Length: 276
Image (cartoon, rainbow, N blue to C red; front, side):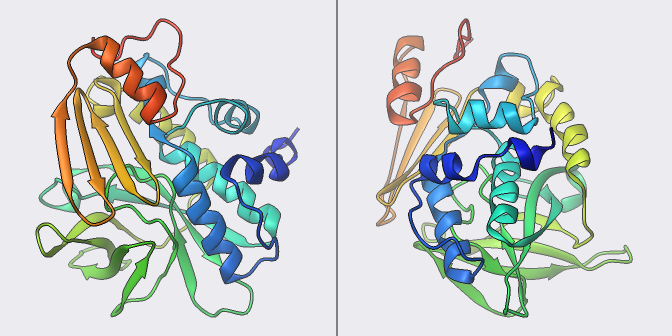
């Protein structure tokens, strides 16, 4: 059975709470993207437990749609990919080098996955991405055009062109950081298409490499209309919609488990210790 046959659109839309239009239009793309971003947690508990998560659609449905789990970029964006195709959109996979926290794009391998979406009747392609685990992540898709700023669900983004020696243009997604008052690069990418099979290779590397940050400590992100919540190791950070930020260190394993299960709404795999 193919991934498209294993994907259940009704169950997915029910999980993210989308009850709007199912026609392939810009309003549907925006609504489904935002509903997904606010409903499903970014989390790395499978790599933390020592295994790369399965990208088989039946397993993604069981884990993220029918279960109380989230996932990281490949899982989130594969689900969105199949949902958008089922709704009538034409979707192409892209990959990126994460530049957040890096000096140059060349310092990082291509490990992030996103989607290029064609909207019927709109000449502009859109970048959709519900799997970037950072406060500067997209909540709504943005047109893939240079020279303009885009605001969606309270976040501002733009694209910049970066110097590059290769044959293809190098783009960067930037997010506006209100605390720092500046634009901050999130990831860099070119526009050549990738296949779902490519995600399998990236997923294995990110999910099993002992040098990957996702195999060493819990890393979770959850966004609602009121706040963005981040757990990085034992450090919990809450960013309110008005920009106010509070941080604290979790006391012990018991508190970490309570926070993950209650605040992030994620069921912890049996036998996994969060804080080592």
